[in-house]
Image (cartoon, rainbow, N blue to C red; front, top):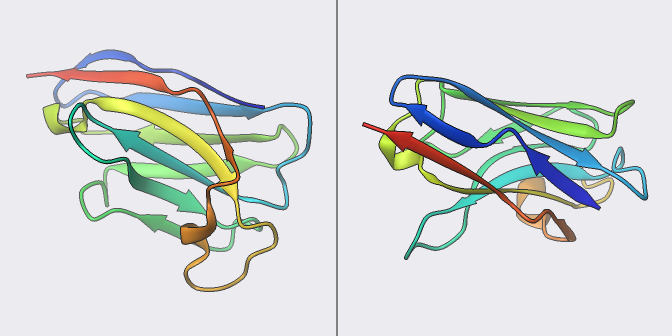
Amino acid sequence: QLVESGGGLVQAGGSLRLSCAGSGRSFSSYAMGWFRQAPGKERELVAAIKWNGGSTFYADSVKGRFTISRDKGKNTADLQMNSLKPEDTATYYCAAGGRYEDGSYYYKTINDYWGQGTQVTVSS
């Protein structure tokens, strides 16, 4: 129900835009997030956006470089990644959860729906 696209190979300093498309249901009432998992490491939350778009969250490692956005009408959530570094190399997953969650830690509830992932490789 969540399908990611936009991954690929890019040189350090370059940019990629990941897109997550929802199908089968509307995700407009859910918080959306992008996670990543590198080989041998745990999955980590990279960025999140509240169901109403009123708040965003970014991991310290990507602040100022990544931007999450959503389009409720299109049922999509995008992740613009700039100034990419080799350490950004990972499989990136889109997820949704926290329906109508308004708390400050809404991003901790994003675990109801998951995409299959898209690979991002940043070469040095």
